[in-house]
Length: 330
Image 1 (cartoon, one colour):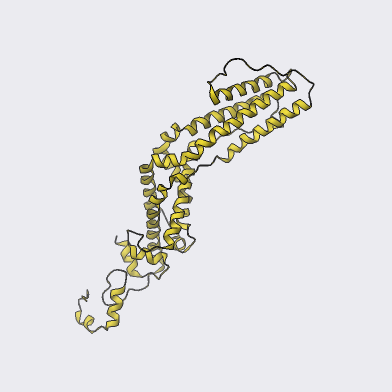
Image 2: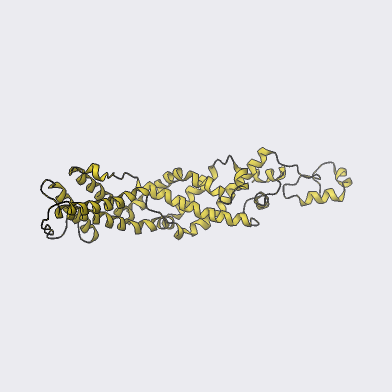
């Protein structure tokens, strides 16, 4: 054994037990004497650095599970489903409470705005608006046709958004992987982890939820600068814009017919692009949390930076000043 102290005779007189203790220390070379226990401040710094190492370990596997990231429809979108139900009830009520009338003739020719689903949406709203605009004369079956047509519009709009919305998170992460890695890696490096020790000692998903989950809003705004164009060009946005436009148009027609108090429909004002971006971040956070749980269960050999210290932190071993010197010198 080679002693780093200049007083070599002291090392020569040291007992074999002391020398064995020195050589088994996982930290930096401390000479002939064992390292002291880390101070609370040093423990926090060790855990802070190892928390960030945990996130670096979990990032790549989480990205590989992009297909598991599903962006759900925003809760505001429930208003559209509720509006369809109210319109159908109003149609039923108008038939039950009005004198019998012949059913208005179906509109002729293709609906404005194109064929397929979009044509159907435009046609239905046109019928609804026509019934509402002639509220003074149209009763019974006339109202029923208009309200049911508007309800069909909203139901089809919901269905048109649901499918592309369910895949946009995975599509985004797959297409913009490099950009995501850069933004998230920079965030991990600069993250303030003031409660690092508690996070390392805490629940199995604590670090992911703190560093990524709690910063989802800020991260989504950063990501929008590099993925905004991709989101804007996705089918989800096209269908969303069309659906919201139809919904808000139906509300205007209902209000113009003097039925605002009866239906109490509210418009939807939501930055859908930012919503999608934040939901993708939260979905990624869930996948990172799943990886964090796995790493905590078997931390040996998982880290590339200070692997011995990483193991001690998540094995909940006592931390030494030599561990502090190791993580602060790399």
